[in-house]
Length: 443
Image (tube, rainbow, N blue to C red; front, side, top):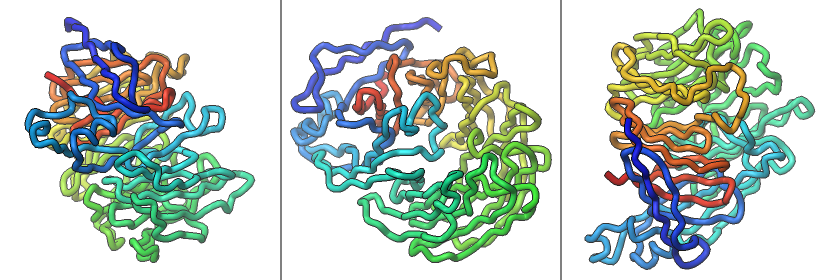
């Protein structure tokens, strides 16, 4: 593919969100990306929950939005609907165990030191300190309406368990103080909790517990094989009406899935006798009433992608030509599934057959040992319109989601970055320089 230069012109704006005039960021590919938003922060940000507000054009400029973000009609009306950071997750220094060279796949919990809540004008409304003297993880609901702060035990504090549910305004909804800790939350405020074990891997045994939006225990899903497996994964569907539960031995088979409804009723159970699911390196995506796609492994490091239908039937399971920690994604149309290894291997497959539609291994490591951690870390993957967006290390890749053609590549050399998508905008969260940029594809 012939490479054409992408030049992203960043125009300075007034105030703390500004930047020097004339700064350019260069990428390669056939697709232009335009910087439409900038904002600086005082500390490293690692994730953001965005909200929207209708404001005047002048207010939008003060919020960090650039002229390129506004249509002619919006300028004529003088008002525009914009996104703004409503909830910001603040990371600590790398040496403090918050975010370092290993960046886990998006969707897994991350340690943070603070949650900040902002007004649309950028003023801090409140702050919530997290994990100051202990280990606590933050889990966010699919549509980011709720989040739960979950206490994690360790060797010197095996009883450090429990959790607190908050809404996106920072209001405390309820708290669990017994031996369980939440591991996922729905957009209605329901949670799934387990008895966590500090050992790696945990001892077999333990069940899943379902709590409603008031913090009341409404159901327990009993471990079907307590001598072999333990709870490793739970995920709510986008609509919050279903939960996929996974029991596994972490490093050894079997793997057992349950699909339950929001009341805790078991809809089906599926056992993969020969495969293990890793809570750290595995990944599952759910398309309600359609598909469940994920990864599993067999043997030392033989990784497989699989697809189940909504009735729990295994439609296919096929080997993946790489190893590492995985991200799984179902396309919005439901006709494609995607897999991405943190080692840099990316695959698009046809949903119904599992047949490979395209694959990209240009950046894939051929060595099972990562020699240069910052050169890898493919840890986020999203679909936006006809684009597949992948974050690999400090680089953003944009592919044609149907053909796998690389359309553009944008680098942030030496930076630790994260991504967030909101209202057709790609937000690049630069945790090194404490800033957020908003990008939009421009044909």
